Length: 184
Image (cartoon, rainbow, N blue to C red; front, top):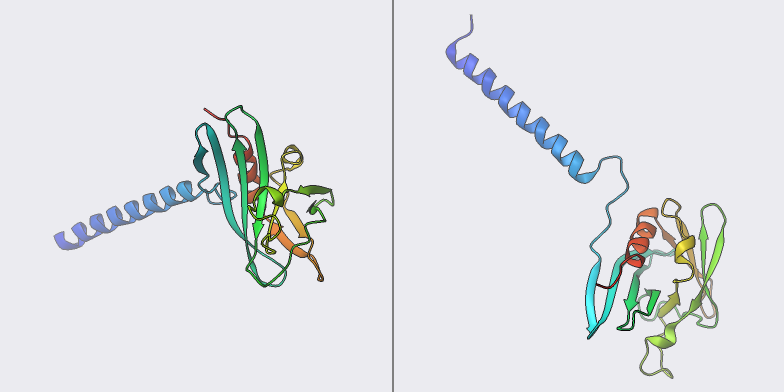
């Protein structure tokens, strides 16, 4: 025969168990267990009156273990002209980007695309561009990027092997989301 204390303890234990199961289910739904990672926050800023920029910032790691900042951004000018660029920034002194060569994007199925260099748009002193920063025009390539297929970026360098950066499908999805933003 169970005592009154044991009965209340069993009821309390079942209540706690029910709450924990509920929290676990809620967490799985929130995180999307088994799903691809969610899209990170896309930044929106007004650069000038009527000129909007939408951007995604992520860190990628090259074949040598160096971190690179990958900034994909869409700029919409007041006259609704758009551009979509990818800026890659490495640590100063680690590598010198060869701006005479395009960025190569290769998907896991072997499809290769090239992005033209657009770094001249970012340096106010064009005679002294930062050697660890490169910018590339992805606008014509964006419709060809498939969100479910990972990419490998090959960034040409001066006097060395190209920098190889792996781009997961979740980041390709984020770039597509940035590219689909429209001015309001």
